[in-house]
Image (cartoon, rainbow, N blue to C red; front, side, top):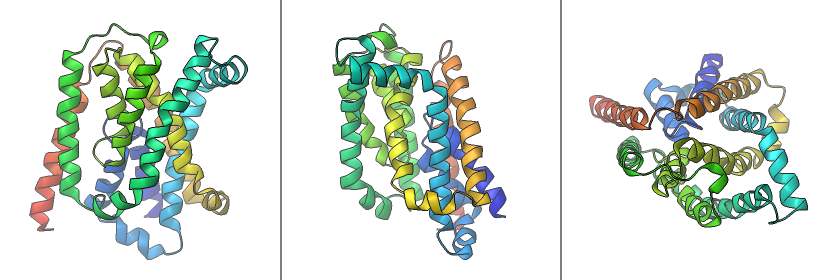
Length: 272
């Protein structure tokens, strides 16, 4: 059973981390819908933490592999050329834009974990609200700014908005892409910048559990979860960037609302 759980959660993480649908909300809701929490808890040990870390390691690998050349260029130029080159400026823009999300995580993450993540209805509300905002903003915004023309002001606004992703249902990629669209950045450029900006956050989420990674690196369940989320994540990044060249975010807004309706129905049917 744990093998199936690891594979399914790996798929969910690989899709949810990069699509604007909220990976944290999906991981919580999938486990809730199928009643997997007791199954995982019954195993004992730190298997729950190990699975969570494995999923983040997988998506970290996905974004690093896909954007390897981008990050190589950004880092080299940022550390050697500073603000003199376009890539160097973008590197430091990303560094500064990461700070609000990190600060918010340090201050609020534990509180949100305790009081919000266990509330399916709150997650459903977050899915609906963010879905409506995503659709409205995307529909009414221009696409006048491409990736190369993103400024420090743009990155700062997007970075601040990323802090809201701590709330399950909001979605880190969803809020950053929405903010990018609000600023007039093209859909594809908003997605690419969102993925680059999310790299340090995803890395932090994985590496803060370094002892667990070392302890479970040979655990078959850990490897299955990590490999599954990495493969699905790579495919998701590639397909989404291509999709947004010709399409809008409407399908994701509709999906978020449909999922929220399902959550509410199941919640009241169960009487939970």
